[in-house]
Image 1 (cartoon, rainbow, N blue to C red):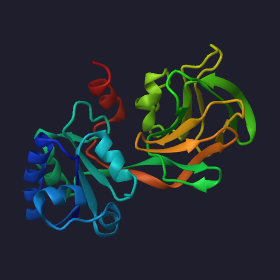
Image 2 (tube, rainbow, N blue to C red):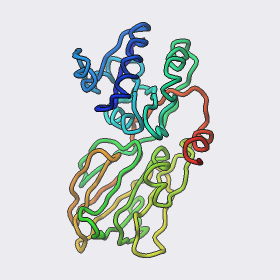
Image 3 (tube, rainbow, N blue to C red):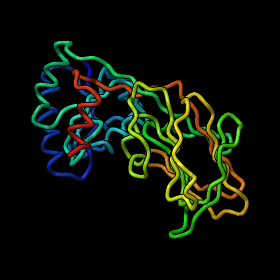
Image 4 (spheres, rainbow, N blue to C red):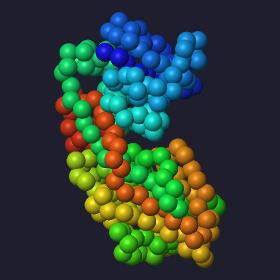
Length: 270
């Protein structure tokens, strides 16, 4: 087995756990360490692109943010170990890391594939979104004005703090906090959820994920920011367009059988 290892930075508890996991991985195969953690160890480090090319499975130690950091450049299956408060996307908590690795070595696991969104700003393709994109005000306490269309058909004109377009994976994140639905990841749908809309009739939509969803910032609007998976942001000027549709790439996760519904009960319904 060839492993990749990506670790949440600047966290002593996570670093301690990652050192223990690294020794387990070295005992069971070859390990390539992502640059950030490799620098802490004083060892040779590799880019996420390198890990994606070389490794069979990528192990992440941290939380959902660490997973999204990996997914930005990785399509190989991710075995995610939780070392944070929530870790909704992770598969095991820290105390079960060793047994999880043992299950993988025995082949006692499956790979779950989830949809991503490819993202365009004025026809230029950016990085894919595994969770969601937001188009949001660039100025605190100032709303933006935009139209929303699906496959070229206008569905709404909105004044709001912004809008979220989420995958089923991202439905349990930011989109859920603004009133969006919980969506089974096997449903091929995208969620369109306004953020603090000015009119009550602007409600969340669920549409087929292979449709082309476009947000046009109106000429009368303030400037906005396009944010992808809470990580990368781009300026959006009045008159510019953001579009998303189903990506040809997938997010892949190592799973041991716990259902999505069980995860929701354990981590969201507390």
